Image 1 (cartoon, rainbow, N blue to C red):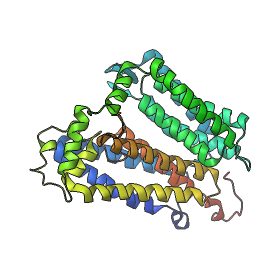
Image 2 (image 1 turned 180 degrees about the vertical axis):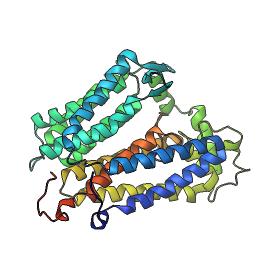
Image 3 (image 1 turned 90 degrees about the vertical axis):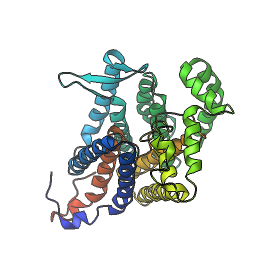
Image 4 (image 1 turned 135 degrees about the horizontal axis):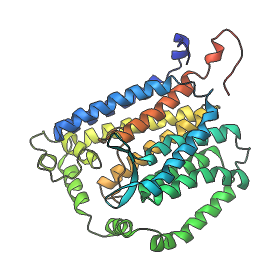
Length: 370
């Protein structure tokens, strides 16, 4: 830990916090209208997330970077524990029971910050050459991406696994990999996709894809489209928002909260929320582009990719442009795990940015950070 100097706090990225706050407030308002009891729980999650943010923000992350591989392998160990001792729900084995307190944890949620930190650690330790990583380094970093992907996909939780895969290889694409490697990968994916569909996907996963490409959308998507279409330009009052109030719209506080938002606030409200996400993503990208520190570069672009993927998939799902998967709207859908995860990632980012020049202010004139 260290004493916080005002000159250090001047580096704090307040703009990202300003963009997140209206998302959280709007989300809690909608959840409170649909199910007041859930809004109280969500406030508790927000409180826990705020405390977690503060705790992670104050950690000397750069000085503790030797712990990053240990954190990564602990998360992998927990995924292996799911395989042998996992708790199953609705046909999926994704949780581990915590003895004596009657609670469970979902290790796949812990893998997201662990993988992003591990990528930052590896890339900072061995930055890419001018033409990008060659095959040896690419395969080394890919191993750390593919290992959790395989373990999570096997649970099965293909949605989370694919998000990790896209974030991991998205970061590699952004940082730089020799172009011939990407050409080979794209060709391999095109050839392998039909085999994966036929032999590797579960029946319910093939059913979701079939429902998506069929002419008639599923019941969930039909009700979501009705809610979005009925919102009009300015939205409906609470009493007139029948899709939500009469429970026609399923999972209105989590997976389909965007449809609920549009029914209540209309096109203008939907565009306002999308604009907040767009500004946040562009801001994170600017932090990454104009930074030579690979820790900051990787973490900020990874968070930007993560928000873009979650937002894109969730909104596309509600309007019938993507299969229905359990991907929440970032920092908007009801639930604690995803929200706390994002706060951990933002705390790591803020720590790396805020304390980057700490040693310039301590009077010693030396830098102890990497």
